[in-house]
Image (cartoon, rainbow, N blue to C red; front, top):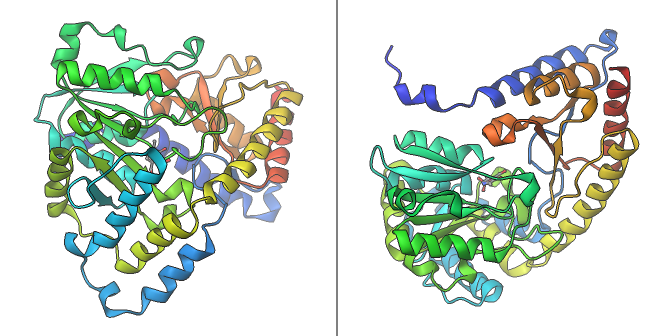
Length: 397
Ligand SMILES: Cc1ncc(COP(=O)(O)O)c(C=O)c1O
């Protein structure tokens, strides 16, 4: 049967293989006779922390309503779009038109993956950070675009150096996708970096997409935002999510704020693809914004403790870790004791020997090779026990 050529480009190979290894390990470990410790999955940014009760109660209260079971067209999303505009004004001091500058999304992953189809023609060039979030690359492949990578460097504290591209190379680009705070390097980043990208976008007529699901999860420094730069309305679109700030990842609630022509384009594209989330879920999102605005601060306090404890525990077993400035992840250079392995083989061997699953950095692009990502998505005691398991494996090598 015919399958499109672009599927072959999607490059989900590393993650698919990691997933298969995890499933295989979990199946074997479920047999008590195996003697294997249970799987400790630290490879996904899917948190164990819980959403605000106000959000869940608001959803539950609306679940039984007939309107919640109906398709939801744009007009019906007005209450959430208005709540989003009010949040943006409180959060960034910028006035946003909820009718023309806000769009609801089924997760920011959906929005960032669809954006290239809405703004690029086949063969157009688009810039990604390397390492990148995988759906940023996937979206370019779906749109038959030409990816161009801007390598981030640990020695430069992951600061993007936009001067790596000549003016002529900038002129060739139609889109650039950034995201600070940055997954996977767990770097908060600086407003000056986003401002520099805005300047390039304006000068070279490039659409700037800023993926910002971690805007509330800076542990050190202040999270940058495209919306803090008054020129956002001329050149850009920013993606926000309820998944990380309010722990609602499974409910697939997110939104974009951006230049009217970009919001219109993405909305037109999405009109072919999906309807909006149920009104019941949207009610939960409104409750999160309005009744639980400080939820992310509580999360940050927990992630900070986990980060500090896990970094100390790993250092104690001989794997010193740079302390990340953003919550949720550690981004670790492969330890010297495993210098013979690449990131995927390291993760496979670690899983087999200890039952701890991490994410191979290579899955985030060539710039992620030599690194692995650890998600702080289990209670501190489990993380520390995981560090001990890792330590035993490293010591045995
Ligand atoms: C950079 C980035 N963008 C988007 C997403 C997905 O967010 P959502 O749940 O809103 O689709 C993630 C999730 O880990 C992410 O790290």
